[in-house]
Amino acid sequence: MSPIEILQEFNSCYVKIQTIAQDENWLLLIADKKIDPEAATHLGDVLHYLSEAMGCVEEIVEVKFNQEAEV
Image (cartoon, rainbow, N blue to C red; front, side):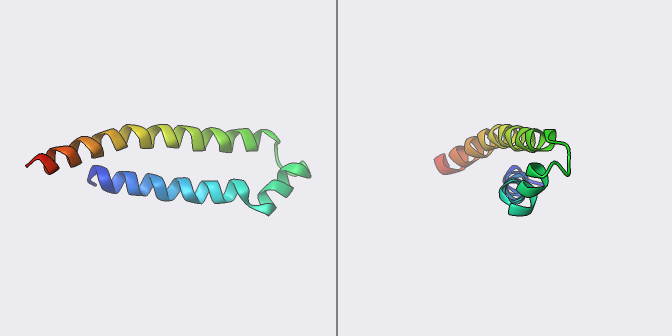
């Protein structure tokens, strides 16, 4: 996979996970304590670390884009 493909996959995952985090059923599971309340924290952590990983890959993509633009 190229860096841009990796970034696109990360972004796709991020959007899907964010959708889950905002889903009414997910929020009800937490509110009704049907799952460990820490699950919301863990999901937030996943979004945070995925965002951090995306930032690292974005740097590579930007450098490559800038190098190609200079040519």
